[in-house]
Amino acid sequence: MANLIVPDTIFDSPTVNDLNPTSLVPLGGRLMSSAPHTDAMLIAGPESLAKDSANLALTRNGKGDWSLNRTAAGAETYNVRLAPAELLRLGEVYYGQWPSPGPAAPDKGIQISDFFIVYSVGVVALTSATLRLGKTVFSKTAGGAAFTQTDIVAATGIATTTTPAAGQPQYAVVAGPSPLVFSKDDLGLVEIEAVIVMANTGTLRIYGMGFHANFNYN
Image 1 (spheres, helix red, strand yellow):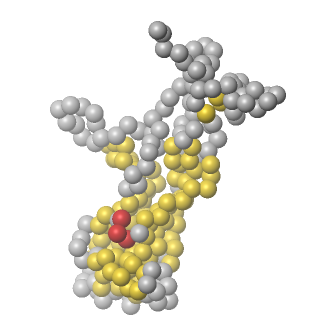
Image 2 (spheres, rainbow, N blue to C red):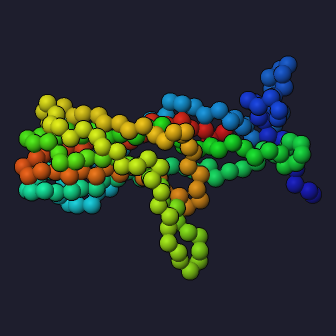
Image 3 (tube, helix red, strand yellow):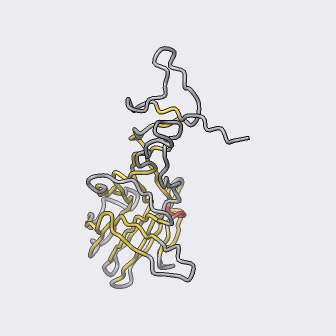
């Protein structure tokens, strides 16, 4: 028996709309939409952040108060990153349309609109601090090949001044790329990276990192 392809239901494109205009009953297949939701937020606590030094110690400061803590013993540089394990959309087509198999679907998945860090600085100001949004795309070459690293948003300076108190963290946010883009690279790994340079005797607490995003998985 031949495979039966049920037409996809596409409810927001007038040129390929599969929704019955009278009864508003989907005609079958997969439910498709090209318009993303615009209210997504992901925030990762300190236990979920990667760091390049054991000096940044995961600490319970109090009830509901966890952070990566450090008191600098000199000029020190720390790299902290969040690589969200998101489900990427790599591209597909709408089936059951004419001409078959139909038009390519618009880009879908996660579209980062801004990215942020929640942190506090004590005693003396940081020497510098930046946030960067990038992606690393690995090769599918069986024998091995170099990966490609791209800055989606280059390292951008954020506040370095001391905060009112260790228990009063500040929020630093950097806008996403313009125009916004969906990440759809096969073997692509998206990362948010903070690079912080501390001065001697300065204190640092990193409470979390994350992003706001548009998303579409239909």
